[in-house]
Image 1 (spheres, helix red, strand yellow):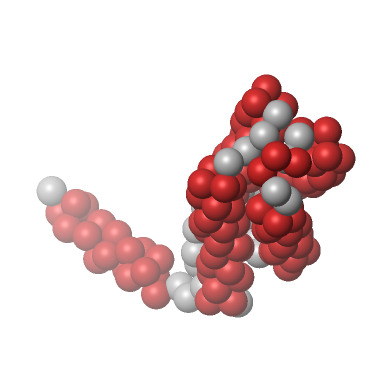
Image 2 (cartoon, one colour):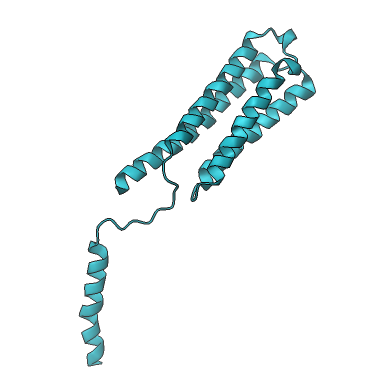
Length: 152
């Protein structure tokens, strides 16, 4: 019984030491990557230009083949972004967000190919949708930058 009372100050001392050690943090997010943030913003601009160009084209002239090269280029950019996010450790959320953008893009491409046109309503709505997706992705990278600065 007496030995148990002698252990209490020792255990409390260890606990106090553990709580007072500065700089010990557990990280569950990937490091900030300025290149990835720049890539997100570059692709966002390309997607916005695509929808702007489509909206500037008369609806009777919006055949899929006129936009096919843009679809393929942007799809390739999005696939590259997914891959870059996948290879970064602790980066599941950013990978998921970039995969969502890719899936949306592939869906829009398939729909345009099948219907051979896109209405103004759909084009405007999808343009806004992509803005929201890319803003979320960019904010995620900015949050990583803030987390990294706070840990340094």
